[in-house]
Image (cartoon, rainbow, N blue to C red; front, side, top):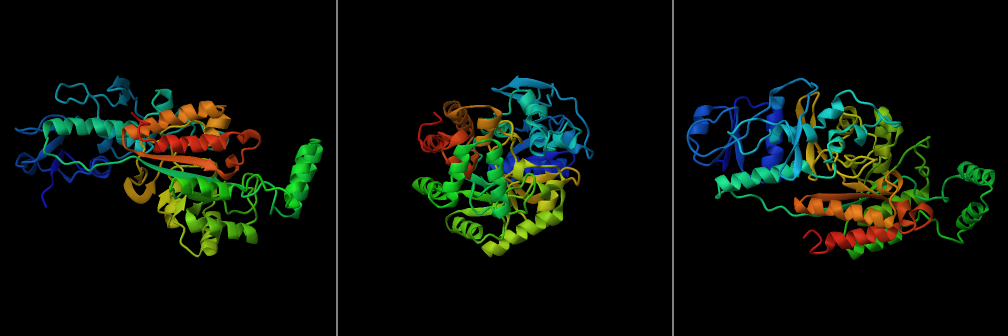
Amino acid sequence: MEPDLLVYCQKITPRIRYILELILDDILGLHYAATDRISDYESFDGARICYHSQPMGAGKELVILPCGLLTEKAINPHQLSFFDFDSSRAFFPVYSKLSPIPFDLFAASFYMVSRYEEYLPYMRDEHGRFSATYGIAMQQGFLQQPVVNQWTLLLKKHLQELFPFLTFRKSEFSFLPTIDIDSAWAYQNKGLIRTMGGYLKDLGKSDLAEIKKRTRVLLRLEKDPFDTYDLMRDIHNRYKLKPYFFILFADYGLNDKNVPVNNSRFQTLVKSLADYARVGIHPSYASNSDPEVLSKEIFRLSQVLKAEITASRQHFLKLSLPETYRNLINLDITDDYTMGFAGQPGFRAGICTPFRWYDLEAEAATELTIHPFTLMEGTLRDYLNLGPAGALQQIRLLVDRVKAVNGNFISLWHNESFSNEKRWAGWVTVYEQMLDYIFAEDSHK
């Protein structure tokens, strides 16, 4: 079957093949093909994109001038030059009147979604992570814009003007709520040693209110504050939503403090969540540097659920490229939800559409699908020090930007932030108002 759109490239590399598939097929839904044969391109009657330094032959074509990134093989530092264009920032400018698009949008998109800058030397934060502070998106002020989607819509506009007969897939905004369970209960089911340690800690602080609270919960006179599962289920059922729960199912450690995995109540909870929601693994802090630990955690959770575990999100959002994703692939994880920053809301990869991970060191597209999340409640509360009102304002801004490009909005919440207690007082209302805004018909107009 002949394609509707033909792209000419002097050389078709894995990078070019990958980004064309993402932009032209996955996002725009075009039936396209790429060729490096000039004769095939010149004789083609349909819509044409010339990804080359000069036009190729007579007839209508959209020229996009390459900057060279997509024909390179090595990972090289690039001196990026930024400029404002079409209500967003852009880079990899090309100075020519041949193209109505003054930058290599294929290369810029590839640079963002491949996380090219995370393969270059960078200063790691206290958890060994790439910080938003060092990323070009935050430094250039476009972290809160899904620029890859915006650039793709720009490409679509120019294609429609040149080739009005082209048919694009109709895309729609979607929303996925995700919940991380780092600690299933605040006080219950922790085991004797940890429970006694909790009391000693309270005594050391002379925190009589906490001692009283802990005791009442342990005596079943009061509900555990992190036991928010019925509330979450009610809220999600009200909106007919099927959330994704990511469970920390790990041995106890300095940064991994969930309930013991062999606790029967914990296992019952996990099974009950799987009855109405999807469940994935929340790989522990310790597992990020130890594939054997990761394998054990995935196996344990799969044994409890009697189902294959195919989705993950890293605890503490610990992500080291390419090792973290390679470890997941080796253990048959097909979908990962870690792509986002702990310290800032927005679009770490510049995109709000799921995309396949490109292993830049191996120069190959993989079958691991990355689902970038837009915001985490802990970012708003703990990093940005926003109260409920300020958080909601930030949330609405990001919802509007995802809706404007018909993208996928993924939120990250924790079971404890539904407690409505202490630092999370008022945040259940934030969540419900977020959902109200998402499902309001005119929220993005």
